[in-house]
Image (cartoon, rainbow, N blue to C red; front, side):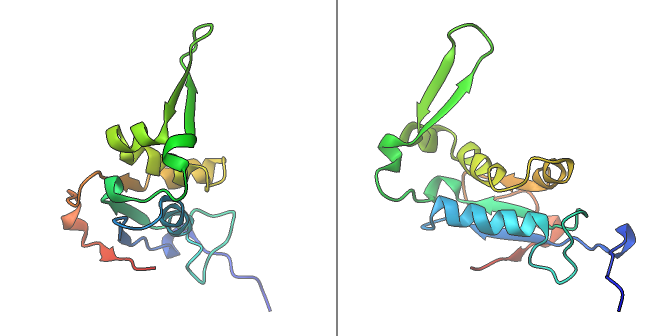
Length: 142
């Protein structure tokens, strides 16, 4: 018996819509990361990019459990000496919730060429509308 190796022509990519309203930020990010990598497919191989496109809507209505809104902090450095910036997730979820969702999904994807390619297929939107109706995305429930 030989091992199945998918070819680039064999890979078909679907579009999925995930509604994050009322769902935990982390659990939504896990499902999105699995779809982006293609781990839900029987033809998954870790060395081939075989994932799907993912649209996450209602990022502003995602839930953070516990005291994460007050205690969890996002840090970034501007590149200047002493310019380490910090933003609490309560503020981040009010101003840029799609960035918080993207950051959560990025942390669950490997930091390789395949992972960076997979992240280009992620679209996050603050509200319930998205401009990808022409792709006929399927609603993904978990």
